[in-house]
Length: 217
Image 1 (cartoon, rainbow, N blue to C red):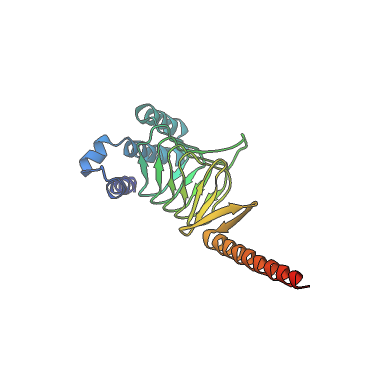
Image 2: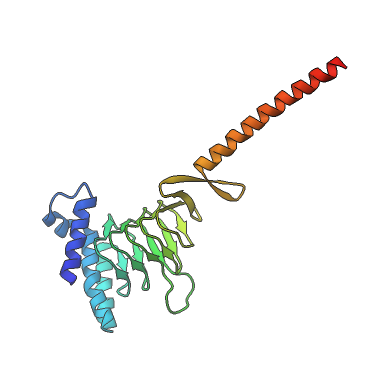
């Protein structure tokens, strides 16, 4: 099982990183893959309540790769940690299959309470460099979190979020614009602007007609 997961991670790098040239190169030289290999063995120990051994492996991985993944975190298959330096993934975090995580990302918790306190990422989620996802909530499948965003609330599927704090900027690939505290799609916003233009033109015409009527009196 562990070997299959590692192979999936290697293939993910080859499929999504254009700089990857061969399987051997990925296995020997990619620190993101190394961190995942260490983690998969550490998680195996963690699930069997061998916590010291699990934590020892995770700390060794952190030392050699500069990527910190708590052995309790649950990671799916086909994950790509690109560049990877400074990535932190907390104990109760869950990362779905085919996710991509760039350097400086934190999947962290808020507060010191026990239990589930870290985020859950769905399938195919991309988390940009420096982004922080903090708290116990779900990020839907195929979402994108922009670089340096700070996400503090759940997202539905196929959402792009950006900013501090992060807000929805795209839904299903369509831009979402924020106006007067409400989120409007680009199409709706354009329709409103067109209506405003037409109303302004109509008002100007009516004012001219009224002025002409007054001049005749």
